[in-house]
Length: 158
Image (cartoon, helix red, strand yellow):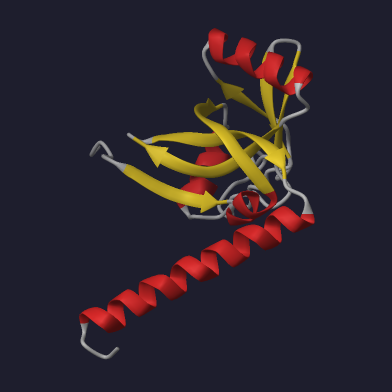
């Protein structure tokens, strides 16, 4: 069997970067069953309502939807079950402190294959207020307009 190389993104949570200010990111392994991995290889998953929580010294991923594998039988999995994330002990201790002290959230940003194993990128994030979202959109639009103007100038179309 050929060993996979590189990083192949399965699903990303683009809404998370809009709704949250990302403070820190972590790469975590995830405990899955065989039919879940096969369903992910088919590129089917959703992080729309997903979040992570720390319970009793372990990090759990909740609300991730991995549809049942179409070829699966009685061994099929439950689509929205709670899944355990695999992190180093010192990372879990840091996450416990940050989430309890300052009221930060753990949000999954993406799920991908790395060296043939499924990984989840989770972020320590702080929720944005409505005016923060508007300011980010205005800033992004201004930067886009500047790049357009520079491109026109480089082409001599001033």
